[in-house]
Image (cartoon, rainbow, N blue to C red; front, side):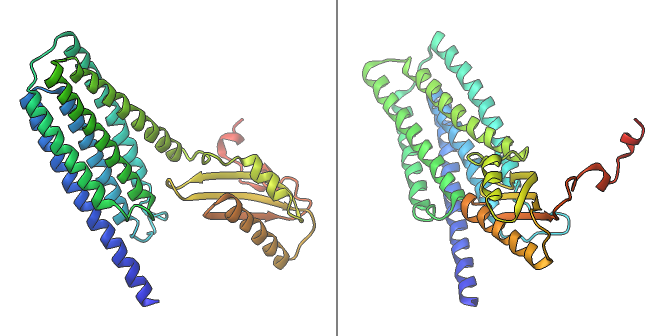
Length: 312
């Protein structure tokens, strides 16, 4: 048992070291591309650099999440700090959309008022960025298979690689044909790509923060499945939400169809819990069983009446 725990700890540390390496590579690429973009006059290179900076922030978020996930729950933070990653994703995606809007407007200005661009410098800097992105993917390759967190970071680097390929191709076309409109055109496409990806992250993070039901799971399906269990007559006060992007919580009240002993009620609860875990992939289940005949188990007569209702 001790060896197993030690092995798991070593794997976690290895993942953290690889993530730190990918952060260093991506940050270096972004700095080089920003400087190169301003020197060469290429807005496409600057937009690719900002894309890299945003993804560096995403990598940092993933790294912090890996560290926080090893922390134990406290009396103040009973769920730990697992939602810090969701909050950071919300802020990160909001900034990405704002930055992409700015780049889009700048691209329109460049389209209307073209500027001289050093195509050769632009191409070489973009090529360096492409090599760096490929290096980042190599660093994370392998460890991303068993971690959704690292897999998302890996996909960010894949997006950076595609973006860098577009900038390199654009530099070659501009140097060959002299098409200056290629630079703002690439910027527009990169901005649209960033907005699309960022919007999906923003929508998902808002859904989690508002404790919405997970996509793909219908409460009606859960209720119907549980009512098929012998001994359950009704399901109510159902709540289902995600603590983070992977962990689903569920709570509900179940009314028994017959009067049950404590042992029988617990067996009924276990049956329902197994269905929720095995069929719907719910990680944490809280069920309250109500006896037969308790038609208003959660009615006002069983609860403390709020003061504001007494004043009516």
